[in-house]
Image (tube, rainbow, N blue to C red; front, side, top):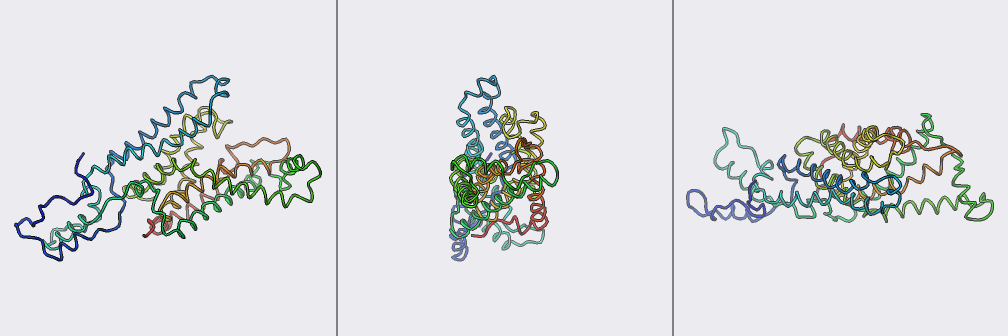
Length: 371
């Protein structure tokens, strides 16, 4: 692994190979620094990120796996879960520090004009100069935390992420009802019962008001929970996905990122998180499918917005909107998350249709946002 800093161009002593000083035009070209671009990260570092993320996540989740079920009920599950969700960000920070030790030619050489057998010295020099002028991503840019400007783009894509996944979460319920895997009841009996208990009388006149209040709570929760999901997005969509996309293309990057992301959840799945009615192997298959379909749309939000925030808000809405499944369940019926809601296969149908359209137009839809 090279130990040259990518912050500076290759050392030339300020002179051409023939000993002459560079021309004013060449010096001007060298002094201008282009906007940071996604680096071509060596495969060994991409692999290191995946292995380190899995290792950290599984290490954090291991105590829960080893606990007896009664002891697990007394354990601080929120603490384990929050630490687990930070593991992709921690891995991304470590691997990015290793990445920065690569030379500019390794990371950004793919952006220089290729040299053919008929290229003359002038074109070769221009290609070298192009590589030299490329500056590495800042720490926050590399993790997808920035750019935050233009603010209008950040806000509009974040709103889109929140609204899109509210629609996905809501639409999954009648779709599950039509397919016979979810006891969909549009009269919302559990919501009406709960509202009546809180009011202390028949809630008929207040159902519309209650719905507006509860919808506001869902959207407020989606905003308030965003930092719970930032660690996940920094690692998988912030650092890893753009580099995987550059190396393998968009479709393979969606599959690879989703599969690795699903495997990362293994210790939580083993103790009954998300799919408590499934054995660990079935739960793993479901989670990998979920992470490929939903993760692909999150990757689209990340690439088109330029940062991880819209994807993090979308993740928060997935969590906040889980309550919808209970509102619309018929009395006395159980929810099987393997088959219904956004977690189950029936809930993936609408997001998968959108992802398919995005992948058909992937050169445009997954192109990085312009500065």
